[in-house]
Length: 274
Figure 1 (cartoon, rainbow, N blue to C red):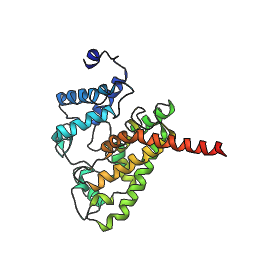
Figure 2: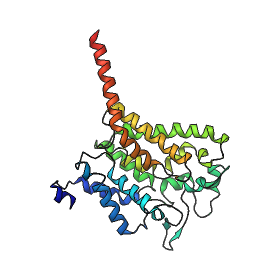
Figure 3: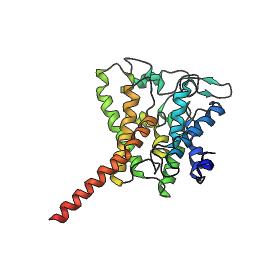
Figure 4: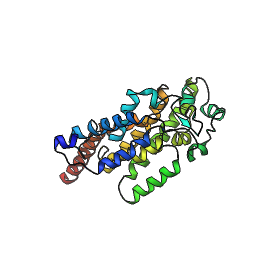
């Protein structure tokens, strides 16, 4: 309707966004809320900026952000994640250390009785979580496919991984000086916990809203990974950080590219001035 009123073409990119939106949601989300969030993500996140190729923020993440802050009881908390035919609920892996003080995160995860939060279980997806985030093998297959066909940049993915590992090592170093259990999560657990891998592969690499220079993509990815750990660890009330990290870096992507281009211009001017 928005496209018809504004006389915009209805792009096939809408189908890609709407394939990603449900993958960021828990399986029990009411469909009417999903419909409102999708409309918000497409209209406010994309169309008002001029349509395809003009948006600043990732539309799929804009839709999830709308759900998170408009209907928080449906997107966060223990009662959201319905598992199995009996529909029993339980805490997610990130929410367990986020709710405890003066404890070690791995001890808390290993001592949780309702689900087996081992590293391998989190890798294979035998845990509660959003539809697209749980099985990490499928995400890796998707990443490999996107890199081979040249749709996304491997620099963003690798940079995000580097940023997460470095920042989580820093938080591990600071953990003895704090009561925050989230600081004790080691890097290899941060990688498979929550939506980090899904967000890095399918959201951070979105070509329109990310950095467009090669060096800028490294900076963009590293900051996404580092901010994910910072948001997860420093604010236990919001144990997942990849969504806000990507949206924040979407806002700064043009600035990153600007400074990268200006730096290249200065280097060329200096080279030819000699």
